Image (tube, rainbow, N blue to C red; front, side, top):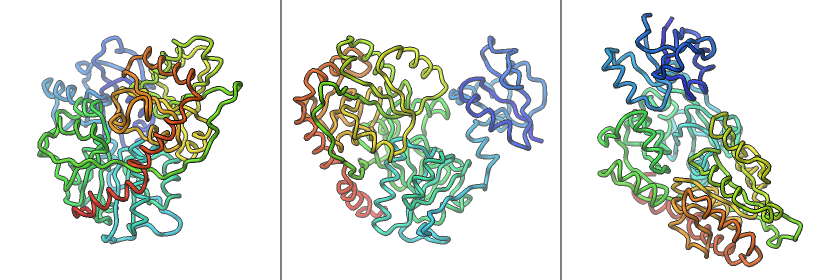
Length: 468
């Protein structure tokens, strides 16, 4: 029986507690935390104590918080053997090594055993309906049209995501140890002649696969780099052996270069299928104008700024509008605070929706808002352009590079709720005069983000340089 101590009595432990204690050959001795106020309290049946109070022999201290790099240094300085210190993600992978599940399309068109020709596999940290995963799904669908076998691997995946991928004839592999597996260890991935690691946050997979078949597609803004540094320490370019790196936007490319100054990176935007459906442009006097913010409900996505801006509007505007928040609500402090902010305002929560459900919702939405504090190229704004919706976005997101303010969309100052409220009021007051903006937004989609644009980029920036 392996004996472990968990370090960190916060959100990460709470989210993974049941999975940890369910491991059959592991005994969790206790939880330690540097916060003395937590000592003596319990998480489940586990008492929280200081690391200095631990007297029992153990096999590992498993770090269950984001400041893992600093904590590891402190533990080593306190005399703990480095080989006994491990991060939670690593530990769960280690306990599930060489055990993966594969979900195949029923038409048997997936990549067969020992298939090395014209095949592409994607690696993602989590299979879920976030922008980077959706971008990769559409990329793989386009590759299938070009005659490639395709698959996608994730450390974990939501049921809805697996179903959506399989229904689009994409094979799915779920492997806990994905980010820490060598190329030779992970047999599933060896069947594909090209591997694209999707997102910065899967960077440990780039390090550990360490193979000339591997390419890297970056989507993130600076906050993701800061998080990974807290978890793993500073990036060392020499640890990342890949044949090519791509960035989804100018913002993604520029941020990557701050941390990897000597690594070449080419811009490669995603493309989305066209599902535009004509919807009424004129609102009757009795119909509310619907503003929607779509995506993960988190502080980084600026949901607090959106709600603060709504609270600055007068009752006159509340009678003319509805505000929709479409995204997964988490059981965390931010979401709890947000719900308190809402009060009696005309704000509706719809929960997380898969891409097909989002398509049906766009018919009813009039204005799409993105209040993100950092976002390299949000898919929701591209979908808004595609559907001829009025878009409102903060000035720090990557899409700003592709538009002209007040012509193609509206831009407000990031984290400035009063400026966002000003734009919301302007849209309501001038709604019937904004047809030109809808048409211009559609042109941005067609020029840059359509599938024809993606096909051109695949031919010019991938096939022509020998990636596929």
